[in-house]
Image 1: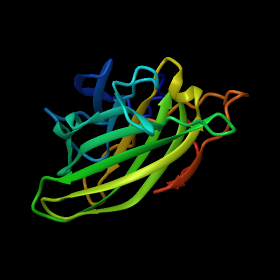
Image 2: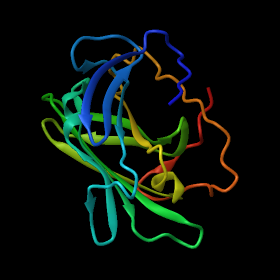
Image 3: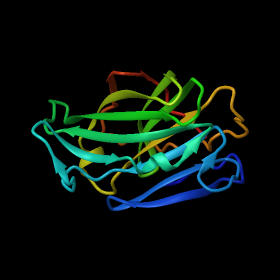
Length: 207
């Protein structure tokens, strides 16, 4: 995956074995251990549709993890992340991809955060949604979902993609800006994804 790095001090903080690849967390400024200043970027690799270990009646589970909870940003963690792709393909050869995120507060104070959720494959942002205001009461959790319709090739073919979540805590340190993603040209045969519900789609970001 190619990244255009805006801040030269981008560092890889955590690496966890999961599925067939690694979960990571990072940001634009260095810190110690698994505690991050805002913003924090976490990434979860997906299984391809055929390689999914869990298969349900209506969908295949491409990811389901609580391991990202070890990374904490200004008292907020991604306690759980799951991704499900529909078994059915529509007339435009697209699958429904549903991402569920559970955010947890580890401090004795209420928090309101924002989160950018992206499907990234082979260096391209395939779909993205912005969760603009997520309220998390002290010591509690909040779950949000985003749902896209994406070309079946984006979840069926290798290399598999990943889900990237950028967590921003207003009022936090916010000392750095996440590196912009290099977005390649869209494949001619790939229909543009659409957001069905759960969040407001954002325009693709250039470097």
